[in-house]
Length: 340
Image (cartoon, rainbow, N blue to C red; front, top):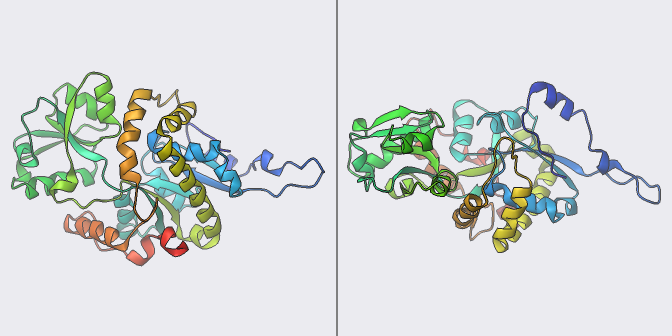
């Protein structure tokens, strides 16, 4: 079963791992003990939204059960939770961002690795109001760009403006935290980066605010994996079989989701964290339409390549986001290639 919790703290984590799932140990009608399912604890990148629908499909349709798994989903209290809690062994798996995996491995020596690419291209675009006169990154010269204080976003702007023939030093970057939409609507800034085309953009549209965007891939930024599934080195060595089983079930959930996107959103809405992160159906339907082509891969859902990892790592080194290149043979596993 998938279990949801609103907040994680050290006391709750200690209790969580001291309690087994009672249902998995129930005896059969004949009185014989049923073999317990393997437990997988997964930390999402954020609260449930369209990008997680395949996980809820996999639970609802029994795909995790078919693989002998009980999957427990947890929500982060801050963006660093998936990496930190996977690295510490408190979570088996986590969903996070490819650039963050590279930073953790290269700068901090954290032994985590990606086992699957979930979203294959950036969802983080430069967003501006539809009536803005800006048409390309060079037009950001002399403008105020809001961002959530994350260095990656500064590197995106510098790369895009430079690639378009502009001077990034003439762009004023303003840390607005995560008040990206309100900062744009109130015209506190002229554009924002760090807003997602599958969330903030359709959310603003649902409120009558039309926008336009600039895709970083078109202006010198490599097509990094927006979201990846990670584990730590120890879990990979000791739980590879369970992780592979998890991805088989998750992939089956993705295939069903791709064929039935409307029904998948309905399942998501049943599992939303309404108290903390309420969802709007029209926003999630639009998000699903945006996500599906960015999750698809000719080699199969979740496939990864060394070339993709090298391109992103090289760009991050050039932009001084990392101090040295990580060992690319240790930073990811291509499950599909090894099973083919």
